[in-house]
Length: 113
Length: 116
Image (cartoon, rainbow over all chains, first blue to last red; front, side, top):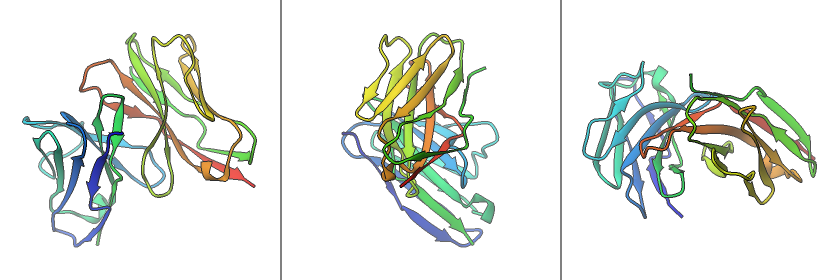
């Protein structure tokens, strides 16, 4: 079936630095990629929707200058958390629309210290 | 308003018994899709079952079945013969509309614990 490879699976970074998370569709073309954030014991909250070759659409309350999304090809979308702070510590997970439904990456656990 | 609700924060079931996880939704769009996902502690999202709004029959996938009651706007997940490995967080999710850019909206989740 469809696979979305997400890296890294976990990352610890210092406050003020930037972190890039990659999601790559391995055997299908992901025209649209969704980026979610999940805090402990909570649901997945959509941050933004990225479409290949165009600007991402951000959900209300999500800072587009802080969470940079790039979807330069049909198989790769990246999320960069810029100037990360401890409150950005969370589980980030991507999802791509495929022929059947949605395929999720394995998620990235970000800890900002 | 388009909304999806799971009212059971936690559920407990004995091994080998069946359990029903509740999910209700609200939409005025006639075309939508309902999904159930399992999220173990590792964080991965495992697709379980799908029900389209125009599907005449309730979806089934192995031990999972979806009790779709369109008039009541509910899509409850039934897990039969529970196993210890079923202990996880379960999310109901909805796709509103049919466009390729339609994203999933998730319910709050239900933490299922299967007791031996």
